Length: 187
Image 1: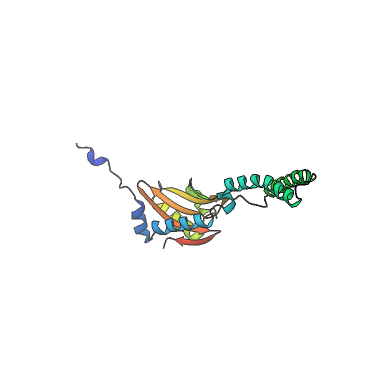
Image 2: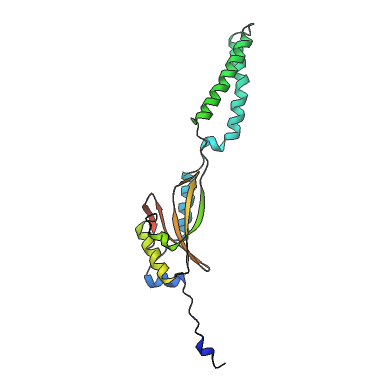
């Protein structure tokens, strides 16, 4: 057709092309995966959380056992029944106080969550400057790319974030940090 030359096809900008232009090497997927697994083990559930069903059953079953032990110590005299019931009740109160006050923490494990962040979030100080600088440069070269922050969360606390850039089929890790300290970064 005669007018086909008037329609210009714009070349698709890829993240890998932008990385090459900026002479940047991303954080490897192996390093990110190893880091995620190590952090998941480090911030895993507590012993009490992992065995809470067995612990609950053991604590409840201990009440009559305590009563029997106290009764046996007293030689099962006529007053040992009252003493057994009182000691079992005291044991249950102790269990309630220990679990109610949080002396035994049933800390759940952590899990990784990922969320999209807008490009203007990259300069807010939540992301360390070396990682944010590369992310802003890549955003300039690939403006349609999405930025994803992955966070290791335990309850509501964010423990260990990382930043990904995603565009089309490409996804690249730009950096990992903890408490503002860079653990791994593009170079």
